[in-house]
Length: 404
Image 1: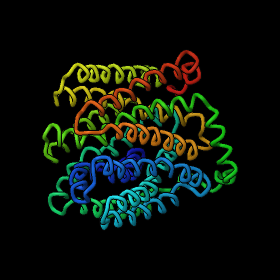
Image 2: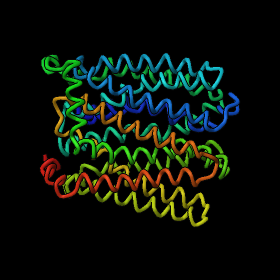
Image 3: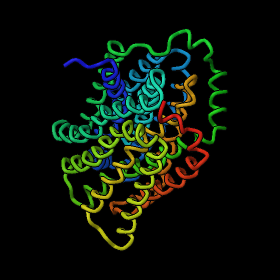
Image 4: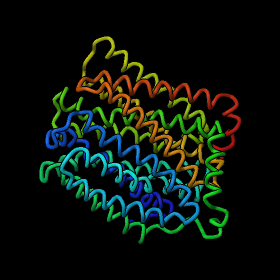
């Protein structure tokens, strides 16, 4: 079956974007086993996840401007090569401190695959067409959270937790081949002339003074923070507290991920009909209401796995509308520095997520309540930011973007 250039680009960008998260999702079922193998407690093992996210965020600050100055492909080659080497090191790690350090290096490599595809989307499209490409990219991206935990469980059963990192190394190598053979350069040399370190710093300065941009980044960041808290806590809560096997955990995780990515496919259609701003307002509010209900259930003494998974399924669907839409709106007015704007967005959102994960990790246990408190707090702050950023003034500013 032949794909149109539009769908082919979505496939390539989605696969490149998925390699970094693949390095996260695939080893989630192994977290308890890693702790036992390396004689590390829950908090220490979770730091291997937090370190990855911190590097994933900070690394984007460099890749974004470099992709504006050197084109989109060169940073991908470097990042995927670094991810390949670090993954091999993780597979050979003999203690948790070495694993954490190498996971940080892994995150630095994976950051290229997070920032550059978003910049490519902005190179090619704006408005609802950008939202359509972004949602298709996320559909392909969904391969990671849907299948990686299951694949991880199978690899762990066959080769132990170290086998997971060997598979990630192979994925990084496949990404290098994909960049070489299937991705064309979307940042021509003529457009790079005005890009330099000075222009990158000036661009970051302008973005940090743009309250509308920061508000949109923050809305997406709060949604991601709740997801990161679930990412770090759910293996221990679902496996140790609720007694799921690694395979059952992987299935539960995949179902919630499916809600996120399935709903993301409606962003362009809903944006054309109602406008992108109303979509964000309704979806962020829906996620906030759902997570408040989940928090109230646990605060009242409830403790049911079906309630946790059911309500988080609904919240995930709402977040699937929030994140791609706010990404498009945040980049809309910054096409000349799309790489820089994409990088800062990714960095701030990853740091928000890592901070939330680290804070909740201070109170982490096998019990669900600390995790649920962190998830609900992120959703409610997101609602506040949504209505602060996209009130009457914010709506007027982007009123025409949904029809672009």
